[in-house]
Amino acid sequence: MENLKLLNHSESEYIEHELILPINNLPVEVSTDNPFIHANTTQIPFSELNEKHIIPVFIKDNEPVISCHDFISVTSDVVQDIYGHETILCPNIRVSHPIKGRVPEARNKPANELLEHEKTLYYERMAYIIEIPTIYDVIDGNKLSLTVGGVKSYHLDNLNSKKGSDEHFKVFIGFKNQVCTNLCVWSDGLYADLKVTSIGQLKALIRTLLEKYNPNFHLRQMELLTKYHLTEHQFATLIGRCRMYQHLSYSMKKDLSPMLLGDSQIGMICKDYYRDSSFCKNEDGTINLWKLYNLFTGANKSTYFDSFLDRSVNAYHFIEQIRFALQNQTNNWYLN
Image (cartoon, rainbow, N blue to C red; front, side, top):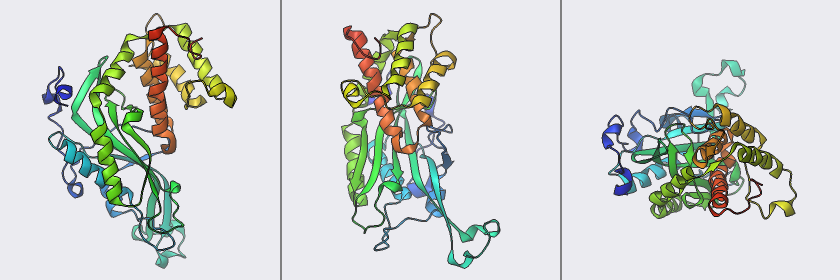
């Protein structure tokens, strides 16, 4: 880890960041002021989760679920245990799908007359990231900082059951590109469907993921993408094939690299190939695979929470398959 964070860089670049404090006394500075995901989400401070949001319960015994507040707190604890000697920023939290209610005393009031203390609220879906800016590297001029995060969607839980039923979480560790706030995640840094029944289990599994993750290897694999390029014709073929993939039969898809991005995201990739200020094509129409990967992760920011991390991982492995084909000069359906 020391070799990673000191690789040709000075930690003085990050002296403006504060160390994270115990979760109930968080500093003002958060991981980023820019959204790491769009898709009808809203940014909220951690204090709002803690002080204003009600906690859903299991209907049959009225026992509380593991709340979004608990999820972030547990992750923060593990991050501090493992990376406590580093700079750790306050979580950036984004939410969607608000579930609104009111206290019994206000049951007959018109909505526009409700007072703040008469309203109840929690969000069905939540995602967050915690950035560790002193562990970083640079690829093709882009600074990448180590980032931990997770996604919670209550609709995946069976709240009609009792406490002890499985509760579902997604947790990841990877890198955030400082140029565009795109997240770089791959399968070795993702638990796509954690099923736990207690906070203790959740904490143990988060720790396992963070301890087994190899950031140096992940960085070196991404750096390889800078060495391979697509011509304009190859890019056009790839875009066309990506659109075609969604309409193939199951038998035709089974031997191909899956493409999880939809038509709207593919359209964004095509537009940004020409217009993106950081990752657009070269003057001769070529584009290296690192830039192409960032076009994919940038387009993925318009994905909803439920498939955001799965598509993030898919974007990396899809581009890796393109790299393998170029490196080994083998056929790839997306390029031929």
